[in-house]
Image (tube, each protein chain N blue to C red):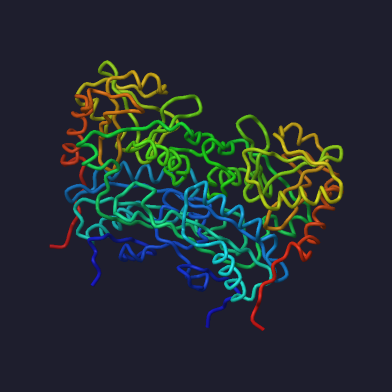
Length: 301
Length: 301
């Protein structure tokens, strides 16, 4: 008996147990990281803002010239069917488009590969764990490595080029921190492994506009700020400015808004989440309950 | 009946047909490109300079803190057995170490994953095809994208972060070129998809010392130059200098020395490989025949 509650995948048009979801070792999605993906959260039995995630995924594929031949409606239907099959009501649902293998052995031509699309779903993942948030999460700023610049790899096409992120994460863990943000080559704060970074300064909410993924949760934060009347700024964010700000928080599809209480040795808010971060954290979960943001999944009775 | 001549893989301690060689879609080797590899050529029934490839692979794993728990001798024995099984006498033999999946679902800690090592072999691959070399190979210089800088991702730990390479390759193919080299952010020539770049200027052989993989074929070129008394320089190579040089060639474990006859609109040597490139091209194949560079494979009788 398959334990579907561990997750499932949709590959080659079929739904299979997550344990069987594999790609070939010669797929350029692996050997060239020639691949794009997106992750939509499922909360309380519904996709959250699925059209936004599908929009971005389609834009990523187009910018990388990936054409796996799956329509938006076919993908949407597959995601619904796959999540329903698992019964998971809170889940981390990933969709991926890969270059595939060359149609002729030894070809080095990316135009001549069998592009393909697959998806998988597993129980919900918190990028910053709830118990870490409860005791106060600590963000490191990487010293040994800089974020891959956007004229090398386009960060808006969501990608698996995480070498800089992983090196930074090792550094943070060695230093006793929970996670890490990276600077660009000009000293501005960009993003970290799985999240965007925000600071709050004099009631204004600030996040980078370049060198970063335009995260859907980042967009949700900006939309929430508009709703509650908080002014926002999207622009380069120098590290010094963030270190002198009132609050720092992260945004991620894996957990929403994550307040930080320490950044690279500086304690914020006496070690407790600031009022803006806290309010946005709560509001994010409220937004996941609103009908206009939800696409209900038809689970078996 | 398995057609082993298409290739084989060594995974989990077993030799399997290449078609069955797959890794899980949630392996961080894929989803974070948290993975390193090396490719050793097999020529005329022997590995070429295998100790050099193993040295580099071990250094790459150490720098990425990957510890799959396979000794050098176990890996060497597995590569021999795997290639012997296929009967392939000219082959492209890859070894890969990947982060694996977290031991606890949802963990974001790279220290807490099941690192693993696998290998595979397929018929020999020419990065620049012999028929392209015969008609004169054309190298493009990427305009839209710059090589990932080495303070973002270490290029000496051989990696699958090829987003910049792939974007550059699309640009080159769109322009009617065969392959492409990338510049760093200072305008120096770095490398391309699967090769190092050299130029010859006034009898001196020049290649970049930074922002590039220290390729084993690059090393072989430098060693061959020493043997035949050609002076070499390893230093930043400005594009303008290369465009004004006498000859340009590429070095790759997939084909050795590949002379270029056109670079971004400039014809070199009246459209024929220059004398130094041609000599090194021939000498490379001669070096693959020398006993001291070979490690013979014990094929079944």
